[in-house]
Structures are given as structure tokens and as C-alpha cells.
Length: 375
Ligand code: MUC
Ligand code: MG
Image 1 (cartoon, rainbow, N blue to C red):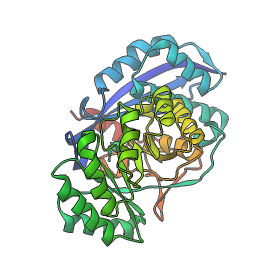
Image 2 (tube, helix red, strand yellow):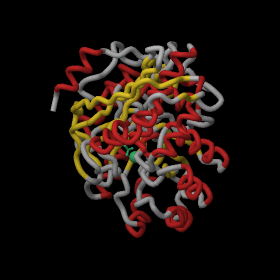
Image 3 (spheres, rainbow, N blue to C red):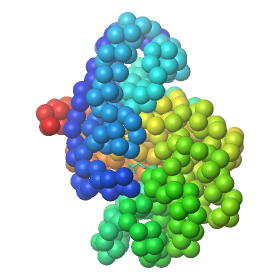
Image 4 (tube, rainbow, N blue to C red):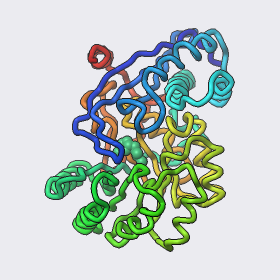
């Protein structure tokens, strides 16, 4: 039994090393809420949620996330006993609705605490325990200068051995983007596969033609080409255009019940997992189980976490039944600052599961203080 003494939240402000362009606009900032949960024995667990600037990718804001943790959750959790993360997560569902970012940061910090108390790795406390000790991690290439993107791709293959590149599309004319993606796919053929992510850019009518262009360009998969709220329309698009290119669902998967609907209608080949969007770590585990039962593959998504959140997602993705599409856990490499003393290790294109209990990371309080002082 773990009795919670105190839950504290701290806001950190980071910048992206390079502008992230998506179909809906440019992102340069990452706002992080660090959550620390301390039990009556003085053991502390840590978690985080990151919001890319404002409520642009989804509805969450850093201010709302902070308010939910400190005002609507902490006072009801402090002083209470919980046997495990499952019980803790059930309590969070009684306390507030939605707010996947707040739920994720709270669950992560409880998971880290539970691991530290029991001497077990976070990955062993999730689902049926760790199924992998490393997971593939991709890298995003720039979408507007082919020469630079190829140079960057060669550099990171050399340095870290990535075997998957992601390109953001839905930003300029689709014809140009398909041509660009094709040039990258051809250049790295046999060494790295190329995924494109349209972040819901195109209407269904537009997508019919566009998706086929990316298929012909040799792209390995396309993430969220259309607005995702209608699983039947997503399925119809796949059937009517008879395209073979795998579709990864992302933005619409806002929880296990929605994931169930998408699974029933077979709206996608794969589901991107993202606890902040799924509604927490436990919700992501449920989404992964729903995918497995429906023969849908999984992809380990990111919301650009620092090394704390990345370690938690690594534990989650190490424990899910399927991870056919690998992951995009490159948050710490894209952020101008970090929260831990040591970076997570990437070896031969694979992020390595740390050995230590809980999330297996050590906080760097000086770096955290610095990030908290930035506006
Ligand atoms: C997404 O998949 O839409 C965060 C980082 C990134 O590359 O994309 C976003 C999330
Ligand atoms: Mg996406």
C-alpha cells in the first residue's frame, strides 16, 4: 500500500531546437508540467506532461493541466492509500473527466513511486510486464529543403542508426510533398522507411487522390490524413480508393471507447499510442489491447517529452503486445534542455530500457531550476 503525502507541480519552459512545422502551424515552444508525488516514507516519484505551445494539436493547455493537478486532484489524493497504479487510475477517473495530460503526469509519477518502493522497473509494473528491453526510435526530417533533409538523415543514421524517418506533410501543395517524400524514400531505400504525418490536413474528397500519390512515392505509411472524428469515413476512404498504404490513426484516438469504435470499423492499419491523448498510461494500455484484439498494429507516439516522460513512455511501449511501427520517442533530442542527469541511451536505432527501479532516471535539480526560471 502506498500512502500519498504530497503532490507538487512545477512548470518548465523549453524551446524546440528547430521549428516543428505541422499542417496547422509552427511550434517553437514546449511547456512541461513536472509532477512529483511523495509518499509518507519520503519516497518520491516523478512524471511529466508536455503541451506544444497552446491548445493547437489538441485541446489541452499547460494552465489547465496545472489547475487539474494542483486544484482538482492533489487535495483529494493526499493522505489516501493506493495498492497499485490500477487503483490509482480508477480514483483519477472518479475525480475528473478528460484532461489526458494531467492524468498522464499524475499516473507517471505514481508509477515511478510504485517502482521505487518495490524495486521494480516501471515496464514490469505495466500490463504483463516488459516484453522488450529496447524499442526502435525514428527521427523527423525537415520538410522544406531536400538537400538538408538528406544530409540530416545521413548524419543521424551514422550517429544513432535510425531506421525510420517521419516527415510532416499537409503544409504545402500535396503534389510537391509527395514528390519530396518520394525522393527521400528512394534515397534511404533499404536503410530507413519513411512515414508521413498529415495531422488531419485533408478533407476526405481531397485525400482520395493525395493518399495514392504518397503510396506511389514509396512512403511506408501515412499518419492521420483526414479529420479523424468519423471512423466510418476513414474506413470508407480505405475501401473506396483501394489503396494499400498503411494508415496510422492518431488525433482521433481520445480514449479506449473511441479506440473501440475505430477498431470495430477498422479505420486504420495501426494506432499511434499517446497517453496524453489516450487519457493516461492505463488508457494507452487499454487502447493497445483493443488494437491487438482487432488485429491492428501499434506505433509509439510522442508529445515531445523530456527524458522523464520519454522514460515513462519507453516503459509503456516496452510492455504493450505489439509495436510493429516502432516509436518516435525523440523528444529529448528535439528539446533545448532536459530534466535528468543522464540522457536515455540510443543504440543502433533503439532506445534502451533503463535498468533502475521506477522510470530509471535521476533528476537534475539544477537543470530543472533553470528551466523553471525561463518564461
Ligand atoms: C504527432 O504525431 O502528430 C509531436 C512530435 C511530432 O513529430 O509530431 C507531433 C505529434
Ligand atoms: Mg501524428
